[in-house]
Length: 345
Ligand SMILES: [Zn+2]
Image 1: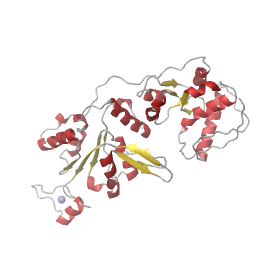
Image 2: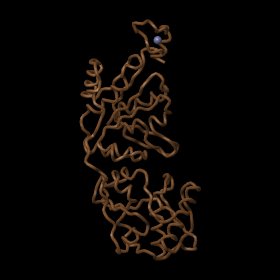
Image 3: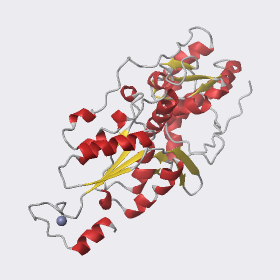
Image 4: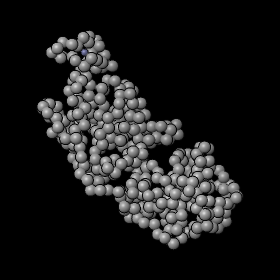
């Protein structure tokens, strides 16, 4: 195969240099030749972000195929992703589960680093091969040693939620939670500090219906994109309780390479906003769209990202700035104006 390279990497410079250094070191450490010529690696389309080291493995295999060190004919059967350590070992990547979920209809076989492969195998066990190193991938492609299919890392376990039975008394609030759970309603709890508003909210996921397989996969894919997926939370309805100081990007998602925010991490689960009036007004306004549509669209200069965000909203607040309005002790000294401003900022 002719090898006509010249380098024009279409990703941010420092990243491309890191990737180039990793790929070169991994190839040399694995006993391959790194060509002394100039190499072009064309990552198209150019306007998509190439963040993370997921392209290391495909770049390394491209160099090997182009220089005749592995047969190029079998590469087309597979999708490869993985970051290379300088030693040629493969490191896990973010979002493996989401990647498989969106591309499983293609019918192609994925070759992924071990930890990522076990995560992606939750989507499909017969589409994911797991590899420990660049050498192992090459051994597979030259049919010296086949890579094993990945097994999802799942021990059968009961989903464990905080139990509503832990709450003593509070009959009215418990009834409200049950009604909210049954009808999928949002809920606002108002009451003095220390009356168990958070404790009650945490017990909503446990009285919601069990997650379906499709819901669990969507939820896991969003956690995986955020880099926070843990197999131990598989099929567990998420409960997210961001602090009121959370930025609007943290709450709804965003960033230069948009990532899901709290509302998407709460997809198919509960978003709990404690001390609702303390949240940034603009951030709360952004919740309108997902509350109606179950999705959030994040627009950045060149690109748009669309994430699912179908959550059940539970909010809590004090009745007044000091929290003791209506308390029989009469300790609340808040003026009617202060109370109004607190409730309707
Ligand atoms: Zn007060």
